[in-house]
Image (cartoon, rainbow, N blue to C red; front, top):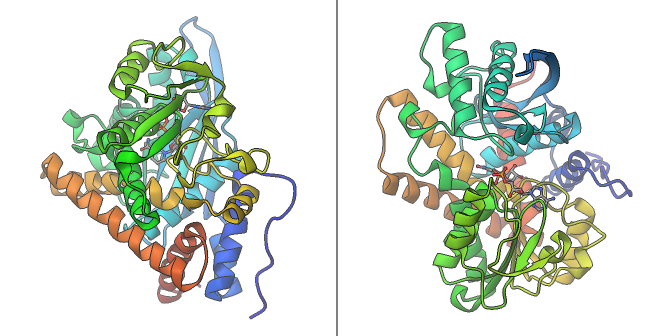
Length: 424
Ligand code: NAD
């Protein structure tokens, strides 16, 4: 078979192109059939919806929304819903493909999807948010389903929004269906451990990588970008393992403390100041860009895509990057980091703790029987540790990066499924 043409190596850096370039590299190393490769790069379904919502002032505003189903070869598609003014179709396509790969890396029987609504949730009242969420769920009720496509929270959405998704879908079908969505509040069938799951997976994969690099967590330092669900929990759990967190940031600014940021205090501050670190006094203010290049052993990007690019990759001081966010490192930056000898634990492995516990939530909903938090955590930790080792071994065998090894693990599994199921 002729090698698949590399998809990138040009100036533009966007998440979908970054994803394609890694996919083509991994597919070539695996000698994947070109026809299957074309299936992998083409989302199965892209749905656009326009959502009329009556605003509090009585006027009707139309919001744009999307749902992209990347694949359903391994099982029903799974993926979050993002509420953001910057959300766009290319971003959702990349995020949906990453979900397919992520589920395959950690051997979860799900395909991949992602959804989004172009809106600024901070500027919407609770009532407006509820009406918008119900409009989106109703518009997509033919797409969603506990055996078809299962949404979850992502940037800008939370457990309350998942509760409205569950309620709107259940009313539409006349059947109470908790398994339609994960990341729900506990009383509605959410899973213990789900809120912490992604940050916990970041911590577990960071410790696994540190062990390979001979780094002792108790004498290591970290810098963390993004202080939402993933960033703050990663920071908290890493600090509990003895890692000194030198810097943190949110969308507006960063804070640095050479003695280490007091993370529980920072979380308390963030939550009591409307999800903002503005004027936090636990460190000196630094810029968002500086947070990424702080002289620390470990960098956890846990905000949004394309934060580490060819423009700042040379300035990164960390020897280990563990990607809490999806797609924080562009394909061009990967090449630079690799040259510098930085180990990168890729998103589709490092932040897979979230979808793992989402899967556990779905399983518990379908059984109607709930597990203890210890059970959930120990099962999820095991998934991340085993997956890390599997990916690490492939990276050693093929002398490639952990990212390409993770893509190879995923593609191999999806390709096998496609071959067995057949195409007609
Ligand atoms: P969140 O909305 O809870 O928090 C996002 C945080 O990033 C906020 O603190 C925000 O202020 C900050 N931020 C946004 N833009 C920034 C910027 N330019 N610079 C610095 N900080 C910025 O979202 P989250 O759930 O923590 O998700 C963060 C990332 O992790 C996303 O890429 C998401 O797709 C990914 N992820 C989340 C989960 C999950 O379970 N929540 C699972 C897997 C991956």
